[in-house]
Image 1 (tube, rainbow, N blue to C red):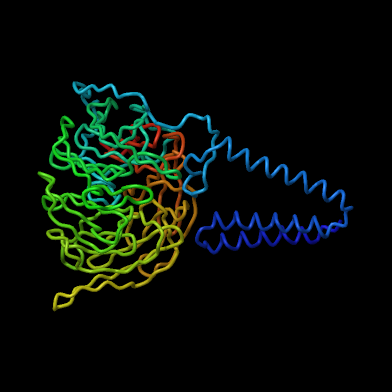
Image 2: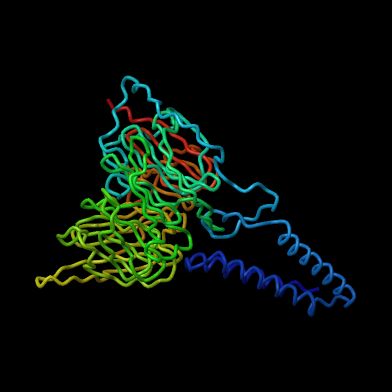
Length: 518
């Protein structure tokens, strides 16, 4: 037997895989699987026709291999099932068919509406007014200021305030005053639950008898509630928009957004966090190329306007001022648009026709520049939005490349640079030319917040990591294990209180502050 040919096959496969990974091509994982299968086929053909072994020996080994393959195939088919994916790669996770299905905290909630948090310990700083009332913080930017986080968690480790099981879903917390509100799935009930911030005790829960299920992404709601003027607005995974009284959880009004508008759900479920703008609550539509945005009266739930000619994405509406006019920015399935918040009129439209899922929020860079990015190999674009003297709008790409490809994580901006997880690897990109300054540090498909010059990273593994960032290089300062298991939910920080959750458990930690904190 001559081994040059199989060795050549293996070397070519390895070099090709390394090159494709270096070039950061789209859909790398399935392509690598294809390369592996092609290599195995080539080795099989070599063994059958070119080894020089006796045909009887070859036939025996071929039959043994075929029997093993058939046994493996039928064994997997009969005795295993797909339960979610292995991280954010999209590769199915196989479990035994008799394994219990995940239901998160499947037991009924024991509510304690009379619970009251103890007074804050002496020396602690009161929580800021307004709290963390919506997705990605007070202004939906993922950027927080004025929090002097300590940088050495070895000497002064985070303190666990509470930890408890929670229902399925990828919702995050919205926090106002002493309430921490999230969405979760417990068996066949989709819940909006209010927990007491400092104790974790459930105060109230609103239930809808629905369950959104999806094989790879998992079951349960995806969106984060919004708290506004004593009310809670929440979008369920199947498209139910509820308005509740924050103090008691009493239902004020409800709309079945998709059913009422004859829209079909997205593959991975409704993920938009409701936006409150000018006494309106604004949410996204469905797969059809119509009604991309829908606005309801925040007080009554009455439909006010519908707008857009594109399908929805997995992003949430953002209220911002661009080119001197307040507008709602929306990353849609195949475009990016700016809308008049009063009537939904499309002010400008940038075609972004890539077919793959978009889940990353846009960043307003300055008066007329907007940065957008998406995963699955799509990449990033710097848009310039202008308004002519005659009132016409234009949206053009100043530059675009594939230097930053967030899959379903969000980005933050500091100065002239944007930071985020490029297919799970921390990356810094210059906003002026689009150049990548550095790419290092693997955290998976997690989430981030920017606190001064520190990135607080919720890694996909459940770790919380503190990283000093600069255009020159990142420096990981410290980390600790906050949760166990796959974690895609966004994290919440209120001064020194950190709230985290995944689809199995939730926890609240008190983070150490720097010595300069009074």
